[in-house]
Image 1 (cartoon, rainbow, N blue to C red):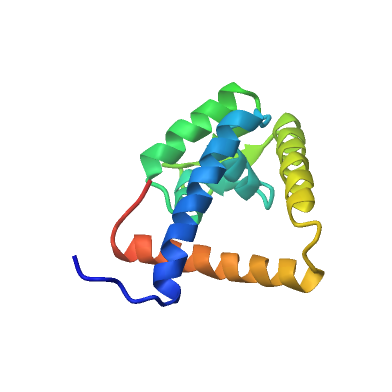
Image 2: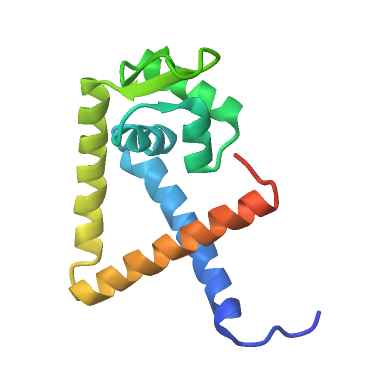
Length: 151
């Protein structure tokens, strides 16, 4: 196998692999108050009710995956469904008070830990990381859509 050039991409790839591995391990061991999928879905609903199709589009997920996740958070009392007045074939999903409280608890736990991890970073460094990660996540979502990869 030919040697890969030592450029930013070749340095970035193993760092991302390490990051994903650490995040997966931390998630399993930390005992957060809700599943990551539920947290992301309910976080979308903080802005207001959405159809399952809108949620799927926002998260880059398959519609059937979102329907299953909505059923799960509804069973937990974190969300509720009602008929969509604009389209009788769909429903609108909204956050309940219990769901809003759970999302807030999860966010606080995650942000507290992140604050400890980045305590010795300057605000400019933290802001730069947030900006670049946001840009990377959007590029990843767009690439997945272009390659027809949905979760």
